[in-house]
Length: 264
Picture 1 (cartoon, one colour):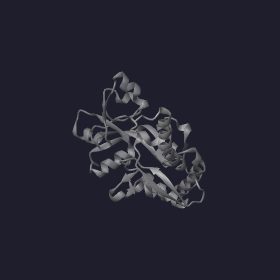
Picture 2: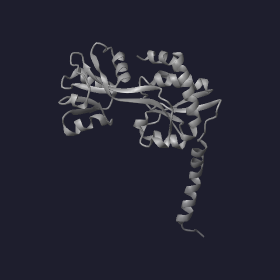
Picture 3: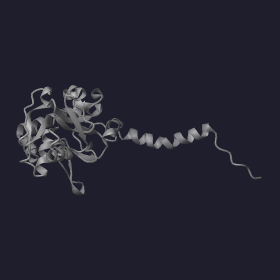
Picture 4: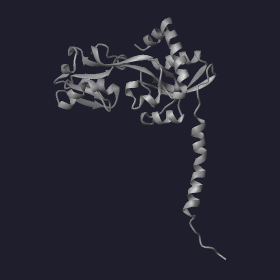
């Protein structure tokens, strides 16, 4: 006799759903790999979808370069590890790091919401935010009051704690753009803007790539000076120590300066 279709009970449905999730849960857990001293091993490094020139540059045919990439490759080779790049969107990096899908990401401690949840290496390079101006429109920066009445091109989503009071009070005005290159294009082509804030190395890279060497100046003093490091899970703490040893060696030998000079 024909039996009418009946929907499965909620308990059966829940059991089936959990059964389907188990393989995914198991994969996430199995991807957590701790450091293996002496290697060989694979280190899964976040390079972000668009890189971060000149620190990480994504070229054609998946060719990678940049200050951080070259330093990491040099150090990792000595530790008998290979670098496996992963393009992770910024909002997903921290979670995927803790879940083991990646092993590390370039980061400044000051940019991290919960830095105590991670381990950081020594700085690979310093991040210094300065003011760029058009040639002939220079000014000296010593304190936040020096930007009073100026219209400042800034990066969308970036915070500038040293200048927060100036912007919030209206003593200075910020104009947000989403791309680093656009900050310099706006400043170059519109006299309405007085200055732009950017990392010194990033600004120098953009200026060099676009032939703008004679168009811009920058202030000697900046508003920040952060160490750009590798941020790792805590189970990679011993790796961080070994990384620091090798980083110190290439700094003392002059190899680090050679890498830095490639991108200046």
